[in-house]
Image 1 (cartoon, one colour):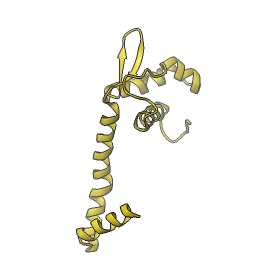
Image 2 (tube, rainbow, N blue to C red):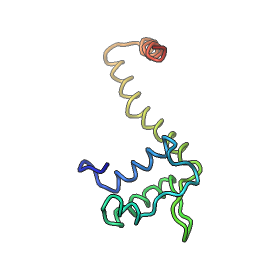
Image 3 (cartoon, rainbow, N blue to C red):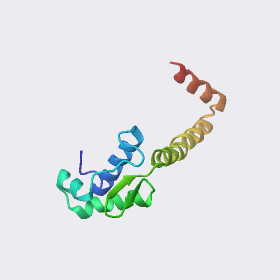
Image 4 (cartoon, helix red, strand yellow):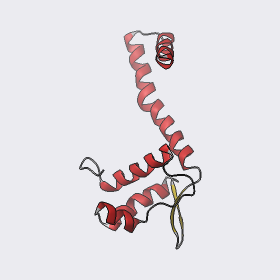
Length: 119
């Protein structure tokens, strides 16, 4: 699972986010400990801890002192909201700007999207 393209802690955080988004990890479900992640991926526990801290900061995970880390009850919705926001700013907004530059009317874009949805 881990590769050399991005920092390991980010890859771990992204894997956990993907598991939350897909429903593999559900709200209030316990996740592996940092030591378990470190052992499983053969990495430094501090690296796994950095990933977990990022997820806590983002509201995806929360800590129960002495028990472990858990998925926040609203983590999936938070991640979906972030994904929607990113989709519009990174995909739709540039697409609309390009369509305007090419002289494509918005109604043509909407019609095309509806055609794709129906197929």
